[in-house]
Length: 576
Image 1 (cartoon, rainbow, N blue to C red):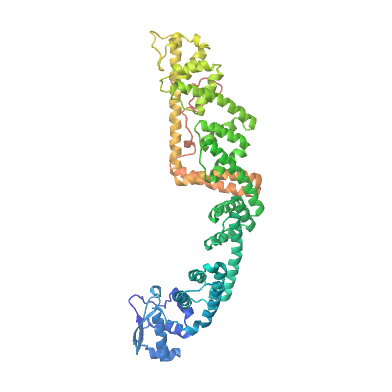
Image 2: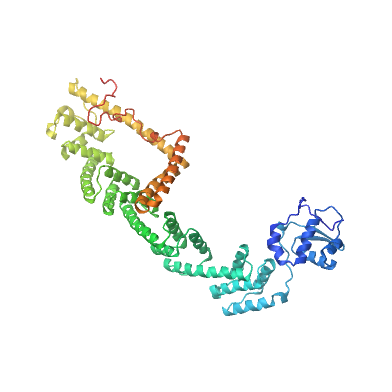
């Protein structure tokens, strides 16, 4: 019968399977005879022919006592179980579950190694305890690293750590190199040379960031990542200088931003960082004026500040606008709407913005007076536009406030004020004393019922009905569009594509000015994102048009008036 057989855990097959762990962990520390015996015995586990241990020893040209000794060694490694020594019969165990039994260490095998290690420790005034020496020798028994290679590692750690040197640090470093399949003196020497170069670079970065400690091994991974991305050493230093104080992790965020923007050289990095610093300063200044807390300015730079500056607005003008927007309770998004409306009307330069703000401040002051009378008026751009319209009708502040008094208690004070003032404008009323008695008796927004309706009263009622009709239509269209947009933005694919398109448009505008060679690639990427956005809308049963208000009448957009000021013929019952 054969001298070896599979254990229950083994599965026989038509080929001999050698586990990787045997090759990586056990094969390097075993001599040639031991490896041959193990592999041939593993093969015989699947052979049905009778083949005893003596026949195997003769075939492999190994003395029988030596074969017994070899399998005793493999038993110490937990790779086999010796069921009988004579005749020799062994049972193979899975390598993956083996832990290896403690083996007696031969002192003469490590005598020279121990002397060299003690010399290194004495130079830094350090001494390891007996159990620490034992752990180091066990490592050399279980890992295929050369003794001289290990001494090179311990010398490196001793120079680096000095009195703080620990056996665990040496072992961790050695295990890491073994995991990278670096076992020989030459391999370890090359690796440590790279470590030394990295250490010098990391030390300089630490110095720039104001970090006063020795480089940490966990930070070396950042250097590798930056190099792989093509980032130059001086560009990293420029980023660290721009950051000033911080950690390597926070520096990594900034360097990653530079990599994303393609600023890999020192020159490109400095130019980008200078622009970034200016726009970041603007973001923080605007945030302070708006009363908004901003920690990382990058998102605000890309979404708002860069767009504003590209449109030609001066930083000082934007800060003034932010102060005005704060009074309306706006955040960055609300302010962006104000800037957009200014840009569409051609107000860009500093004088234009200053004049606009001066006018708005006067309107805001009057609106606050109206608010003190009515109590439920919100400060919005629409409200300011109404105040501006009333003043354009040549009404004094006194007349406007009189209309506010007569609107007290109304469900929509500004709307009711607008009806009163439009009626006074139509009838030529310019001062309080000339207000008709019927209107003067108005209380809480409800006018006294006359005993009859004159032609003027009927016309006023018709205008009110007409305004209400179109207001309802516009509100429905706008609410439907807002609902569609909320549905779309709740979809992950749409939101991702929408954000990418906004950023891509900024990137394209910048590239067309600063990097024309990148513009074509950005256009292609932008088209891909636009297709993804379209697919997401299709899946949601939406279209681009459904994200905008779909007014019933395309001629007047449900306002009741055509662009030339004439009344639209879409009103029900109106003669066309």
